[in-house]
Length: 329
Image (cartoon, rainbow, N blue to C red; front, side, top):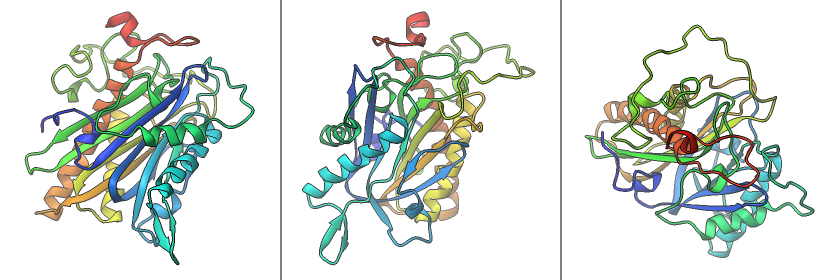
């Protein structure tokens, strides 16, 4: 596999991503949408998730396609970002038709960033407006690191961030990942510059430091955050034509990439979640072989995207953690 031309999830044709953030709040929203509704699924492995409209993504549920997916800061308050996205989509005539009415389908997930040093003294929930702004900003190019849902993200060691990566496979299919890294675990080996995801790095997309020689295999890590304060939420996407069940399998496999890039991962204190999106532009020539390749590529892309998110983070006023870039960049 090789990266797509942007090395972003928007290398999957038809997908658009928008960010909106508030520097005083030290939080933000990231929206993935598309030119037309797309198949979506979800798989949750963390013990403390925060979600909206994820039940309808199950393979046995009525609605087959969604209009957007939302990643937001703000803990439960951030789920209101999806309302702003729904408002914007409805204004353009998007949505599932019910008796002549259009109801945009916008599943969402949140990270806990309420204790990151930003001002959280709002009177009116700011996330609805941030969601609408992120949708309005959606395009093929978008910022990584301290942007959108990654603005105020933290990890067990370094400041977190928004990450993305893509891969074009030998079978011609494209896969991409988008992630807000706010984990209890660390993206690097100890306090050093080497990323856990180093074996899957393509080129020098997150520094080219290579793998650490000494892995602390016997270490028993202690939680650096409290219950509910940590979550990594992600989207993996492809241009393949997938059923909801096939998309769910891709989301499930992508969690392997999270475990490769963040140590520890999927703890009872994290709300780790992966959405899958499939635009359906390219039929599977070999449902078994292509499905196998997509699942592997999704896990690799997510591992790379996580490292890129931490690598791209930059200092912000009020930060309570150092940036990898400040020390090693």
